[in-house]
Structures are given as C-alpha cells and as structure tokens.
Image (cartoon, rainbow, N blue to C red; front, side, top):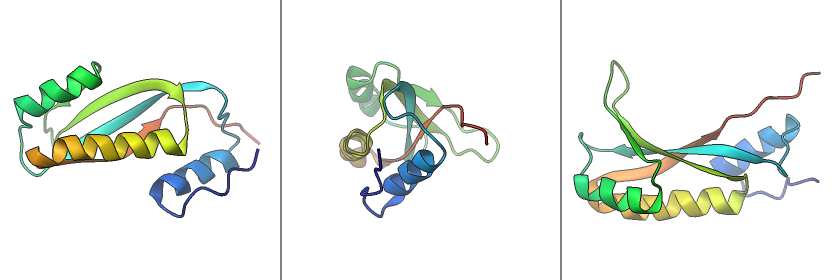
Length: 113
C-alpha cells in the first residue's frame, strides 16, 4: 500500500522512510515517545497527569550530554494520525510545565536487500 500521501512534516518523512524500507504497517509495535523540558526536573504534577494516561511513563534523569526527559510507550499499529495526535495532546499537557513532546520512535527490524 502506498502511503506517500503523508504530509510533508517530520512525522510524514519518517513514515515514508519506513515504508521505503519495507516496514509492515499492519503489525503492532512498541512506539516510544519522549517529553523534553526547559528546566529539570519535570513537575511532579505533570508526571502524575501523564502516568494517568500512559502508565509506562518513566523519568530519565540527565546524564552526560543527555539533558533528561520523560518517556512512555504504547503498543499499537503505527499510523500518522495516532502519532501526531499523541504528540499534540502530550505537548498540550506538558506546555504549562515547560515541556513539549516532539520525539518518537519505533523499534523494528528492517528488511535486508
């Protein structure tokens, strides 16, 4: 199935790259998301709200060059609509606490040539 109609934005670009690599969009995967903050540590109130929606949420404290973040995962089929919806809703939740969610990834094995 050709999904090249995805919007010309970072999420659409990643999905097109995955499609070109033979990604199976009909399978379920672990999709991880990252919430970044202007200042560390993140608000306990934010963590409580995020964990109410995504119980897998974990705080990753700053280490070396990594400024720290909060990560959570979902198990689902990968879709543009779902990823962008989560990015937008979690960013709106994090914004009052100096945070935003714009990073995501999916672990998968690429087909070899």
